[in-house]
Length: 166
Image (cartoon, rainbow, N blue to C red; front, side, top):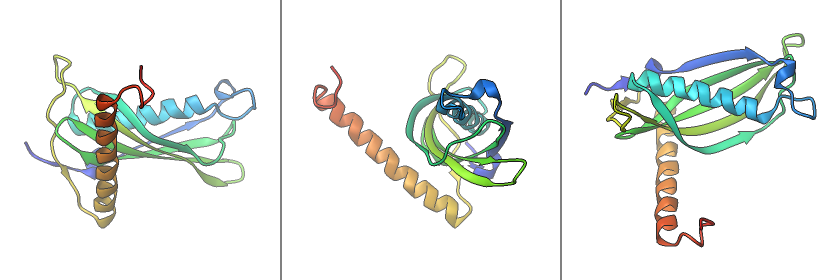
């Protein structure tokens, strides 16, 4: 199977936040941002796999600043890691007040997707070709997150009541 570069699946998505996106505080609801993150991350995963991909986990999602109604939200997503059937996508969210031009880094997220074949089973993925030092750094960090996730999963299986699962 021929590998693919990170740039072959990078995706940028932008959307203006409207009143229906507001939470009771009058800012954009965090769930709206989460859905946009999942959507753009899914597009990256599908573009790499050239097949359906589903969200397996969200390893991290940080909200740094609020997003306001009327802001233009831009989400930039790219692959950090590709394994046999799963892949990690990093998403950076920025908001811009289109009147003042003020831009802020509002959120960062890391999501794991699994590609599915025509029968709905996990399928083998093309390897990821890393071309830059930045991509290599992101790949190393993603590997650490993956190892941590797998270690937590093993710990849960060994002692389910201590992990909070009953």
